[in-house]
View 1 (cartoon, one colour):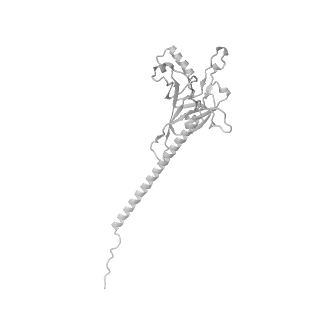
View 2 (tube, one colour):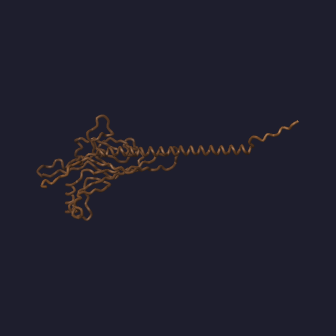
Length: 285
């Protein structure tokens, strides 16, 4: 009678445990890689959405600011000037810009009205709270200009304007203005190149009025004011917009939200400029 030999095929218990452990380790690594990939994809989508919002907001601001038109108003004390004085009434430009806000007049279609838009309205862009909803962000306030507003500053406390929330989660909104001014005769004399009659510089505010220079005499101050009034530029040549948005937080994330900035956008203002003028020739030659 032949004895049956034991079969040595198959896994032992130790080998089976090691195999299951290796398979579980591979599954854990695969799930971790999938989770990291999902988080990276979600982070990328949030960044893309934030940059798209930045571009959209900057385009809206640029299109609105680009439609600025130089409109002048007369103060109340200058309206009823007698003709005997032969004095030109003082005009004020309906434009005011600071580092945090900008106010101007435009003929473009307003965003806050429906139906037949008014032919002219004033726009005020700033960061703050919406008076009705209480939400914070970039606020655009618009008010129709009628004949009763010709001698009053626009957007005073008694006016009831229309407010529109352009964007929320705004961390940073700054404006700069490229102002061009004509050089005075004393400044021209001190220059080596007398052909340069104008100079431009970036400033953080554009307001009506003149400030006295430190150490300037009253006589020199009056001459400077007269020169500035007679050679005043109507609008800045360009407006620079710097914008930063708070990045949306992920679901369940406790990390501090970052602020995403975009490169400054320079918006040229073409209103009031002359283009393609022929070169003046001396008739005597």
